[in-house]
Length: 259
Image (cartoon, rainbow, N blue to C red; front, top):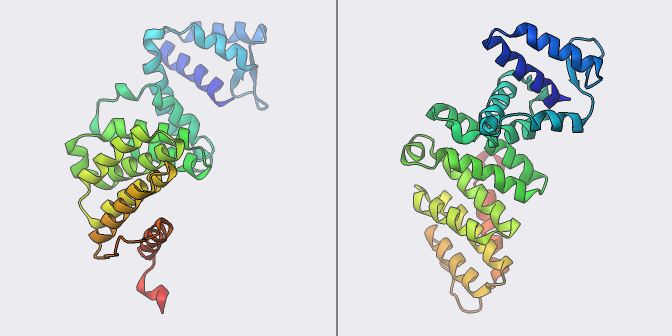
């Protein structure tokens, strides 16, 4: 039980800081005797024997210190998980940090966690079609980096969080949030590709809402950004969307691939 082991490690760290190693050892000994904890196969670590016991232990923690507690759990995991187990436990790390991320004050750590943890967790959730969860993770990343300094120094990270967050919000049906994030992405974009990407998301969301005329107007406006002008009379929405898709696919193809 990964979190059970972390609870033990956290208490051990805290007690060592107070010089209470013996108290910790006695507490673990009693918990083992009462069968609340159990050793693993090689008897190097202990874990809670049941989720309900872990929940009960969790309820004893000071509510005022929970955010800091989860932040420390997330940091321990992020720093100590092996490369082989990283992807397997990515969501656990992300959820722990999501409960305490507001306490992160150092800018470098905010950027690293936004990109290495929350953006990747959002991408993984989106790949599994878990778009509400993807939106949740992208939102946590946005909370950490939404300022002028980060847009200037970590532009692509910011653009990815806002654009992907808007797309996840649209698919999840949260159009108000999508509009808010998309407006920031469009306003902050510094190139045609990013503007085009944002307009593409907007067109698809309008089509989801059955606002076809508006979707066509936005689509035509976006195509004009890249020099494509199509008469608006009788233009079909699906034609615009296919043009958008073609444009995005072509950006991924190098000249050598066409030879």
